[in-house]
Image (cartoon, rainbow, N blue to C red; front, side, top):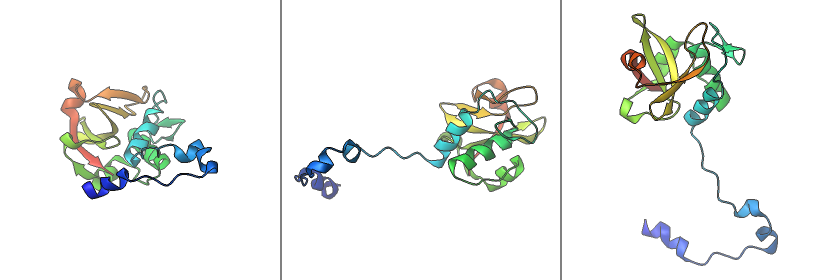
Length: 153
């Protein structure tokens, strides 16, 4: 580590006058987001869009359609259905959740629902007919009891 930091102690070459006048060149590089963070942001931007069975567009989403759309917009192809997402995702321990991880839920006795983790025990999903894309808490009794598994695409 000292070897890496020692380069910071030397005097950097002086920029030419042209470079010094260009603030974009001297600005720090922006932090890179992960594809999961981008997908979570896309999904979050869809809050209020109506639920539509089989939907995977801004006209309406079902749960897996929201995941599929969000990851596609974030630059990653993922399967379309909840079952295919379950099969393709790498299991993640709940203590290791990251933004964009998939959360799978058991509803009416079977694994049939998926949402995207946002952080701080919150997730976004397209819940059911008659409702809209919404943010929920993993601490709510219903979702805490229904949560089966987390996965990373």
